[in-house]
Image 1 (tube, one colour):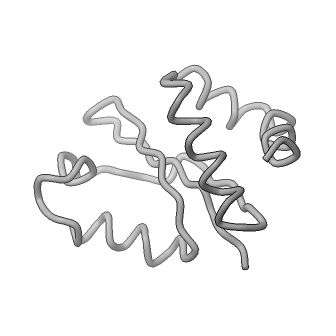
Image 2 (cartoon, rainbow, N blue to C red):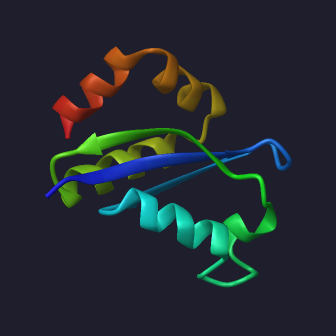
Length: 95
């Protein structure tokens, strides 16, 4: 079953949010609806938009890639992932 790593961007906060899900559309709607509460990270802004997503072959692969991106703690790294598809190919092969 496919899983997705997704990255949301808020211009208002000048921040990215990285997550993993099996149903991207449903998960995004949950962020927009503040399903997880008003004190959660994505509830701090109302302008979240999908920056990009990565389709993974399994939940384990998606979790590993999500952890890798979060561990980098770098906006530049996230921007490089979007602008250089070969980096995503390398991540998918690594995990």
